[in-house]
Image: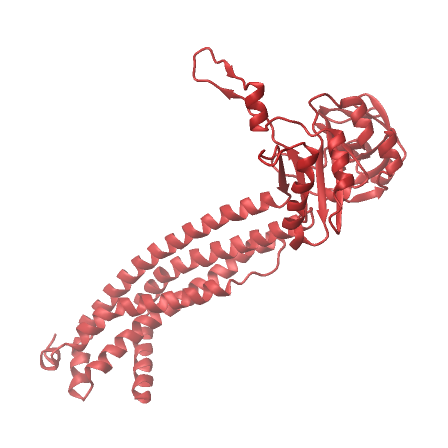
Length: 427
C-alpha cells in the first residue's frame, strides 16, 4: 500500500513537471489569493507592533480624566435656533461641568492607588507667537500649564535642561520649557543654546530651563509646537470661569490600569459631588485608546482580505478543476493502458488527487513566501521586527490542500470510471 502511494505521488509529480505552462498558470492563480492574504496580514501585524511600541513609549500605562464637554444641538426649524438645556436638564445630563483647580488638586491629594503618579495641567492658549531677538515662530504655538509630573506622564523627555520644580509650579515662576519645533525655529536647532535665554511667549518674558525631545506628531497635533509654563502661571494669565483642568495618572504596572482607573472614578465622584444615582460627569480616557481604535480598524481590513482571498481561491479551484478535466481527456489512452496493466480505480483516483493537491500546495508556497517578503517591507519601513504570521501560514497550507482535494475529486472520479477498452481506442 505504501509503495503504491509513493508511486502515485512520483507519477503525479512527473505529470506536473511535464506540463510546465499549465502548472505555472494554475500555481499563479492559486498563489494570488494566498499572497494577498499573507501580505495584508503581515503588514497589519507590523503596523500593530509599531503602534504598540509607539504608545508604550508615549505613555500607554497612563489614563486621563476630563470633563464631558457640552455639545450644542441645533433644531430643524428654519430659524436655526439652538435648543438650550434648562438648568434641570443640564444637571440631570451632567454635561458641560468643567473640572476646577480645587477638584483637580483634591483628587491629586486623595488618590493614593499604589504605584501611581498624578499630574494636573491646563490648556493656556493656542495659535500664539514665541520670539527671541529678531526670530519668531508662526502663530501656531500652544501653551500648556504643567506641573512637575506633566513631562513624564505625557510621553515627553527632556533633551537638555531640567524639569519644573514644585516651587516653580506653585509660585508661577516666569520659566518655560520649549517644544522641539519652537527651539528649532528660535535657536536653529541648537537646544543647548536655548538654555537660560529669555524668550517672549505671547508677549511675556520667560527664562528657558529646558528643551523637549521630538516625540513625533499626529494629523491633529504637532507635539513639538508647544511651550510649557508652570501651572500657576497659566492659571494667573489664562484661566477663566469655563477653564477645565485635565488630570493624568501614570500606573507602574500596565496590567493594573483598569483597576487604577476604576479606583480613580470612585475617588473623583465624591469630589464632583455626585450622588449614587447620578451618572459620571467626567470621562476617563486611556492613552492607548487611539492605538486600540486603529488596530480594531485594521482588523476589519484583515477580515476583508480574508474574503478577497476566499473568492480568489474559489476561482482558483474552478480553474484547477477545469485543468484537471483537460488532463483527463489528454491522458485517456494512458489511463486505459494503466488499467489494462492491472491499475485499480483507487490508483487512478489517487494519482489525480495527488496531482491536484501538489499544484495547490505549490501555489500556497509561492503565495506565502511572496506575501511574507513583501509584507515585511512595511515592517522595515516602520522599523519593527521581522513578522511571520505562523497561524495564517498553517491555515493557508490547510485551505490550499483542501482546495486541491475538492478541485481534484470530480476529475479523479471521472478518470477512474473510464472503460479501459474504450480508453485504449481513444484518439
